[in-house]
Image (cartoon, rainbow, N blue to C red):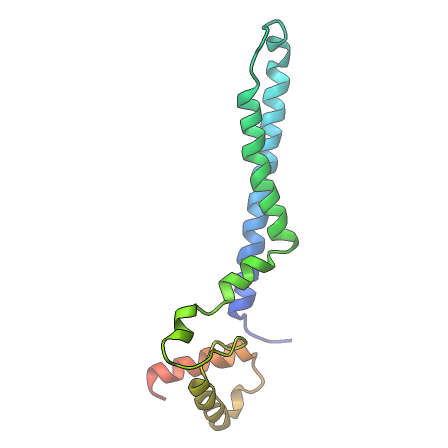
Length: 142
């Protein structure tokens, strides 16, 4: 299957890579907190009221990125939806309603359909790629 990468695909790659990075970083932080705890636990026993706040802080600072990293790896749908959404101002700028699948206004959808009729070679591409090519053609005046 020979197809180009879309904006949606690229967003998923970035989301998953960020999740993987955050998970590995958090795991390293938890490992460091454990090693630090093992190194000082015997030294802190004789001291009454010894505080473990630095250790608790280290665990908290590692657990939050771990949770976010796992979310991004397992799902990340909300982040993807936010990245792929069309800004609200676009629909309010007097262009009419915006098609959520393409991000085009009603007038742009008509022009897009006409453009696609004139360029049947782009029909086999993904819809988001077609829209990107259409916008490029509009900007260049073709």
